[in-house]
Image (cartoon, rainbow, N blue to C red; front, side, top):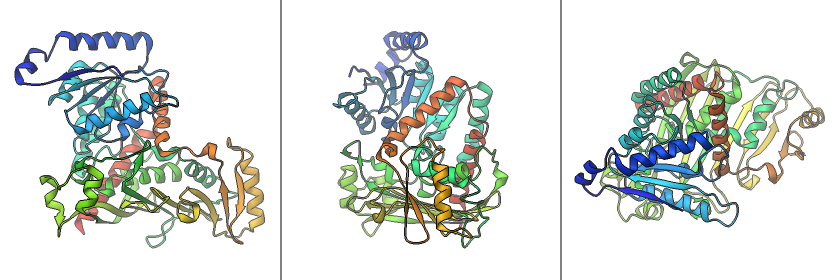
Length: 465
């Protein structure tokens, strides 16, 4: 892979080449190339999370192979470049990205000054993301941001303002919601809209919510075939965010997307009832295995008790959305059981049956959709209705299998089993469609604003307890 690396060695060098010369000329030439051949020129800012690389796991016809990376010098950006190199050099379907890199303390200012592209990808330290988003939008740059966009209630007004400015400037601010592309979630949403099978979503109660989503994640995992090395700051909730505002972003998004499809939501639709948070304890040995560091950095000492790091990566919220009771919970363990990985549990309670996604050992850790707790409907009637519905869906080879006497499950062929890593390409492709159209569905932006109001309200409520 070709690289053009701008290293800042001293303040003298910074002054001598900060605003002109070859770097500025390179940006101008690339802009012309983009306009002539490609609709989209990507820029990546401070890629501290592996999700930034997953956006580039595949190539896109309308995206220039040149990608401008602006980042502080250090292990985060080096790991990012190593991942891109691995994609470029893999034996099967290699990519051909050409990373043009600028490293320096003024990386964000430099990106805003150069503006060699029209889309910036943000996936890294979440403490800084609100600033990165706001300044990029103010500069008229489209933003594709990894979740979460914000991690504290104090940043919510900044996010609202960024969406207002984006609308005024006619640019798109979008977050990467990969879970919408999971086949079992797609099917759960489709069947929940089928009155003959599901009936209608119940209202639920605080004790028995109408919809529950539970996610279990792991600090130690394999990504793109290699052991993931996490940056030490990932364990600092002031930089990564607490679990109740991080992974829960996906779960809150799915509740909105499945329960109120195509509807414009607002802050007044949310009523946060209860929320709680609790830590995962990480030993020094586990921390070293995940980060490569022998000791906890100084900024983590505030969270070290009895020799173990207390990471508030776990959280739970119960709230009402347009009167429907919902529960969201996220748990982080250090490592998954043998053969396992991150898991997702989801249930929607209908007036005729429940739709449940399970991903435990019984399912061999593959998400599986069940039809359970039939109400006023016999199993044979449900089977017949399912067969009729499956015949109308754009997914062939889905099979219905009885589970005991009063439940069914859907067996999904491998060809529809798209991995979490591949979902990033699907989200990016959808975002590129929106860019080409110059707009998004009218419910997307209100949904994002409502989503982050929900997560930050939960954090605020949990800290009050």
